[in-house]
Length: 348
Ligand SMILES: NC(=O)c1ccc[n+]([C@@H]2O[C@H](COP(=O)([O-])OP(=O)(O)OC[C@H]3O[C@@H](n4cnc5c(N)ncnc54)[C@H](OP(=O)(O)O)[C@@H]3O)[C@@H](O)[C@H]2O)c1
Image (cartoon, rainbow, N blue to C red; front, side, top):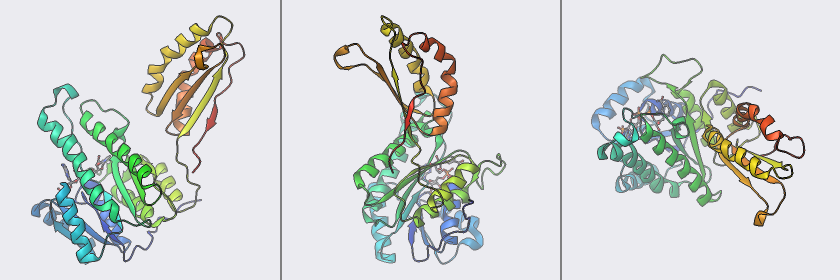
């Protein structure tokens, strides 16, 4: 079934988009305005505000509230939240596409100002906004972080971006555990995006407005709890909309693969050696979240248990292909023919 591209009606919703003046932020702001929401876009400078109003053109309706304000400090974010409560009576949703790209140095070449700007400054801005706004949202609203897939794919020369984005993904997971279902916290994880600054990409790239449409759908999907949603292709964007619009069951994505291996008599150490040798390669796979080998407690004889966790079923399939040539080596050390692992998925 195809998901609908029509935006839901968010009239009356009050949405704040810190970082909304940016390349991705523009698509987010346009989508919420098109859905009828009141959209507050704070920006740190008057020049950015003027430029952004020009960029939006006719889309900058009365529902756009462009305010020059430094929201990147704890005090600044708190003042903005108080001001929204005073002027608009509250806040319903937050989308945070704060920060951009940084490149040019390997980790050991960075200086303190790189560290402060590309890691500390951006992470602090996200935490400032989260702590000011999250406690003010109700269960209907959504808090949506925007990050890049560099959070789990190292890009040489852009390590600070990867580290900061990985921090934000973990921040979402921590917050999700802490709010215990009382609020909805999303992360949209982007590949390269077609924006006003880069419009010549692959047609499979998602556009900034598609990112906005998914954020709007997350706001509207009151029955859907927080999720990490990957938006690296048109297919992933379609799937995200289908899930948020209730056309597909919610899949959290992660897959746990459990294998039991009974070694031949006297070959357990050899089997452990092969599994230990494979560990670094498997852990380095982009979709592998966990790999561990277990023996019976007290080092007694018995089968070994291999537990692996993958970000998605596709990641598990890629893993299976990449270790296929190792199966005969492992099989030669087993008492019984190897079986495919049993797969488990989280219960929503
Ligand atoms: N563009 C892409 O292709 C792409 C791909 C993957 C992921 N992403 C992710 O999407 C998010 C937004 O990216 P973007 O390309 O839209 O970035 P951008 O064009 O640079 O915009 C980011 C906005 O964040 C605000 N900001 C606040 N503190 C900042 C700081 N210390 N340094 C830089 N900007 C700061 C700025 O708004 P004010 O100056 O108005 O306050 C700026 O307009 C990022 O998390 C990025 O990793 C983008």
